[in-house]
Length: 473
Image (cartoon, rainbow, N blue to C red):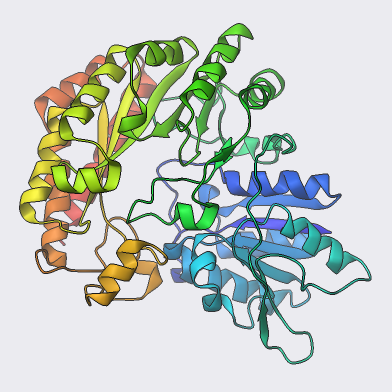
């Protein structure tokens, strides 16, 4: 069967689609496409989000492509956009079946139990989705044994929910990911300036699941509490394919917890060196998994140029609860990372459980003291399925359940210590104090090596300035 994965443009239901600052590959669709191809199906990917396609352009593509199924992946803030596009597909192409999965569908599958959708997946779909398409294309129509599938009964129209099955134990048998499906979209690495005529950027996934159990994150519920991954040789094979066969120059590993096994990380780095795979690459990590300069030096030699650290807070109590580290450890690890020549980016979240104006100031102070190459500050989002959501709901902190508002620049809650207005105020202050410092500006200027880099930095800086000013209105 022919399946079209559709990445929906932000705010398409309002008719006001804007291009994103960075084009990011929809790696989830590439990952699932590998399993569909292996099963003999025909997947396609339309990245309407990165390409900022209009509704008319998307519908014209669907009319020309004529897929049997259209699929979506659901982040909570995209709920309204996905429902809108699903309804439009249903109206104009009533014979096309429509399916949705992803984070929001894992916690609230019933939000999609309406006439716009035929199927909803909870949990992993690598095995269930190909099986579903095979059943729909064959004579056997019984769907009761497809784990995590929710579907409408063909006679009564009532929704039936199958229990989720076990997680895939490892991914060494994963087919080579078909990156070529989306490579023509000219994606942009966020950590560096890249000329699309000279380089190609792609994201990948080498493992899933996370044991951290952060109160604000639902990855462990969606992907499981144990990190399951490809072996080091299998990852190197993936990188070799990207570099040698596709000409990719920049790669971002989007595993939720890539540094669980530091021996595996070192083996991957050494393998890239041994096979002369000269990629500019990087990943995300918690602070406490980066332990010594030797590993960082090896990573840098292998081409690793950035690490994103989810620090989240500068308050010792919140930091210990969420990340099991201290502010001094953060400072030490960021210093080691920069000493190894690796770009260190730190993420901070405002409004976590126990947050006050004082603890927010501690976060801003730590962001300045630890001297990362860059940082980002966001407002906490109580995503459905997280400990934070359950706690804030029980305490009546959540002020809206309009899912489109569940984004990282807008507070959907207020606590006993922080109003929504205060959260927005501190989001502005955090950006001003970190990014508008002479030391930060001078540090960035010293890293500029071309006119394109200067223009990219100016574009990002102007966008940040406008966003900062917009908080006032």
